[in-house]
Length: 277
Image (cartoon, rainbow, N blue to C red):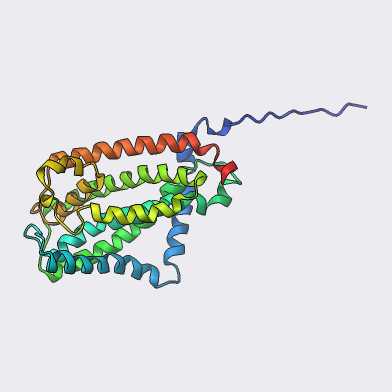
């Protein structure tokens, strides 16, 4: 009688992650599925989802127009004030929504993380796509607003994708860092709304960067969204609003630093997500 053959299997920790960046491409279908799922959850069989994408920047714009435009009478650099504010609300609303979604995405998908291997980087990146859809909806409102004021864009509008891409990487870097912290320290879910609310007032959404005193502007440019917001205004106004190379270069540099820090910290802590979450 032949003896039964014995087989031994050795499972090495981290074995599946040795080709991590190649796996991002291999698991691209999962990225599409997660992104489409999040979009469907927000918009399928609902009215408030689409309305919220319209009403949120629209109502905020109206408040800013009354407070900063009518009462404070802040300058709008020759651009109709509603367009001046709404052009800034587009990138800021995208950033705030995407940052909140990306920061909480790992907690929201805890069941998936604990059951199967895949590059966890896919989850927060896919969550940002929902905010891109919100951005496109709000952009249609901006075009309608510009038609109402008979204010038409020029060739500068072709640079808008660059500033949107810069905003995307800004929120991705910050979102990856906070998402990885949020897994271990759940208190961060209370900090995120405060950071978003504070950022709205320290970013040039309701006012022009030109009112910031010259001696403080370099420090002010440390906020990467300053360059993004001024870039959006410059592109939409046809170059009529202020924009300088310093703020753009600083926004690009700080965004690059955020991405490096965010990815490095995310990758460093990623192997423990399934145990902690």
